[in-house]
Image 1 (cartoon, rainbow, N blue to C red):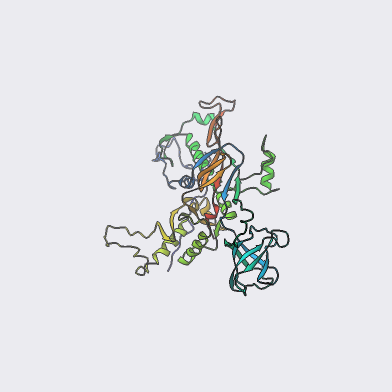
Image 2: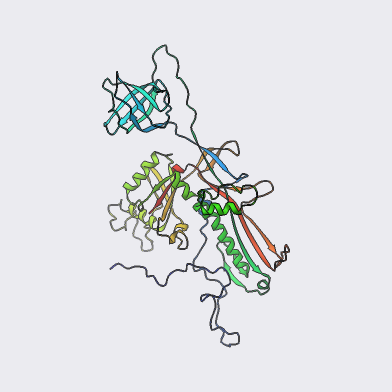
Length: 472
């Protein structure tokens, strides 16, 4: 009979970073006058291990300065253009036929040779453009077929057309017109992220020591600064999560109204929010929905989409635990001798050997590597969501060349990178300062010490058409 994880005792979802009297953080029967004092451990036990999730952007991207409220870049368009949903506008006459794109203009020129295909007529024809604007505009074009019987059924609307070359008769003039390079322009804006830790002067005068081992590797004895340190770690997580989860505020939304009404000085009318990685991939990338791809046929569908995009050969999938197991099971199933999942590779049955039932990646047309992403597993973050859950994201490896409008030239950038506000006099990548009158601070009459944190940054997701988001 299959077992299950019991609901109680469960995991704690509400850590206590400040000094509050809760049922979990004080001893009810402790008495200083009692001769039977309890044995206490002065070293803090790390029951949740490394609690920080900030590592994803450091692993896949870079941080670059920017001195503007708006970051803009241009990405290459397609080298070749294919038109779909074209309508056969009238029956063929004298081996010629007119086609209509509707409201869109085409870039065909007289003399170019094209391939036309239709699923309705179940055929493919080759033809030459003889008139690029038969009705006076560029939404229509006329072709002459190479086949004597070439023609498509009048009024069908699923014709696909693309250019494969050109042909001219002897003694004729050259090609009329030219094509400009097609680029797509994208932009994003940085957001300001803040946090603060406060401790009053009286608490600073009552020292209580605790021995800690922190997420950044520091060890030793700390007192009230213990909570300040955790605030710092939490803020660093916020800096990453804001770049992943950020979304632009829609016009007339409550967030837009609030942020614009509280803005001071220049930029008060600017749009609010920022385009995070998840938002950008859903907007102009690729999304797999309905469960994890867990068979080779599923990944073949992913590969087919990648073939139509940038065809980046190496890709890394950052995923949650279940998605990782699904890929392991899929790869293990390819071994016909390992139906039970115990013969993934060659081994000599050494009694000291630990059986490895996992895979780090595979190659099928493209190279796919996988790694667990703690953010998707953490029960207090994405790991605790069930509705519209994100199970993983596939990030292309390497970098791309784009035109940076700030630099005014082409620049090589990682597909994912952070731009933070900075100038010669102000660096807002990661600012921290103290105010108040307690401790060694003497900036105001406040009987406390306040530690402030600030960052202003935006994430640039370049070549989003090469990314994949895997959702339930």
